Length: 455
View 1 (cartoon, helix red, strand yellow):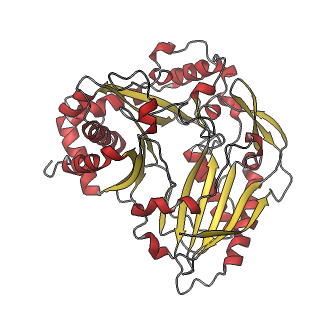
View 2 (cartoon, one colour; view 1 turned 60 degrees about the vertical axis):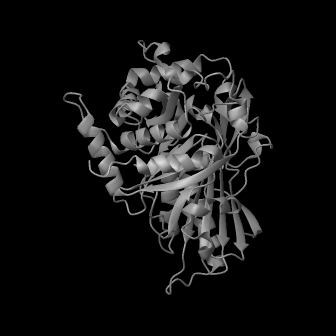
């Protein structure tokens, strides 16, 4: 599909905003520090008479106004040595690109099976440039021949986790359709910086997330696994599928007086088991599942719900592939629950203390521009399963109706998995997963065959 760029705009806050240099939290500077892409497709209706010029003007105007509240996103970040970054709030602006395509929305079919076409609809971020030249938000509006449009957005993970990014998108849309801001963001990374550590900390050796993920038995590094060809699939689980998995798993549960396993725990365990089977691991193969826990409500006192930044802590559930494959699914759910339950106020601050005392953060950063053989890797024999299940990802209306499809941009790293709520918000789930080409067909087979029909 051909896409041509018509114009590029640097959109700045319409009013004067706070200027200066801000120290970022330790979490802002570790893990994924690239941009996270999402796409929104909109279909014209008979009443939909808005021209593409009006659309881009509406987006530009509302963006300039929402940046008054989300002013850190209009700034830039820069390196200060030892893999550390700081934020320059200087209102340099965010980039908004106007594009057009001779293609049509019908070319995408059900969208989920055509994610390879999303590349040209998501604005490119050149990580070979100095990081202080990169906008923290880049958007692209593409108009199709049929009159439909796509809004592709790349938001830097340095300044926004999923909760923050979707808050920004929601408020941008509210202003675009003529409504006031619902709730302004709270920006103060100092409140979760290491200078506020409590006196008593959880021992660092309890933090499995600080260690390197397991390697395949017989391998000394993961270089070969990183090089293998990958493919992406978006797989739906109906609400009945999810209900059957939860019912069967909780029926097997022998724990006393505990809460039933959640939708996330059950589906993540099911994905982990399916991947272990598809990869044909040795029964003794160590494997781990990396995921994130939102700590806004777990800190004492809790963070504001609209905290702007990263308020997620990476945790790891570990096991042997043989146990995941052969034991009831409740066992694997238990490994995940155990990793979640340990995340309390003390545990969170000891995590921050670890980052504070590192000489160099670079080994713990995922920045595509460097070297694909560096940084964290949760490919074979491991997985990284991120959940958007509780995030308000649907219904983004800029004034011309809600999207007909929303989804993640392309991702090409083995083991990356994103869990989304079904578009009807009826309890169904969509799994966007990247695996090695050699493993994907088997994964799909086990993913559906292992769902109990009569739980």
